Length: 68
Image (cartoon, rainbow, N blue to C red; front, side, top):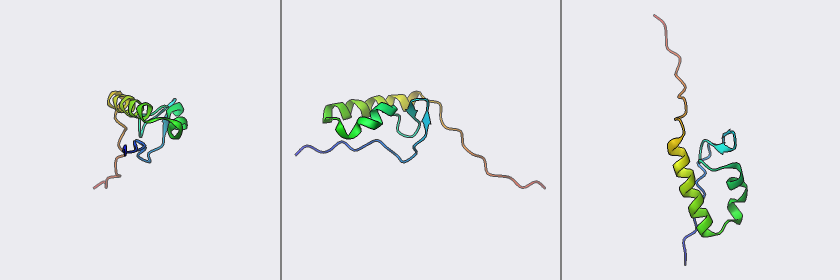
């Protein structure tokens, strides 16, 4: 039996334009994920990984500091 391709979703669902900054998929790819066949899912995961590599890293929130 062929192993199912898991969704690349990491539950950080935030769109920047048409692209999710959490998983790297486009809005269209997210919408059609369940209907995709295995080869299409594999290609989508590869594209998403490449997109994430080229995206600017998310800004980190700084913790408030105490002033002396």
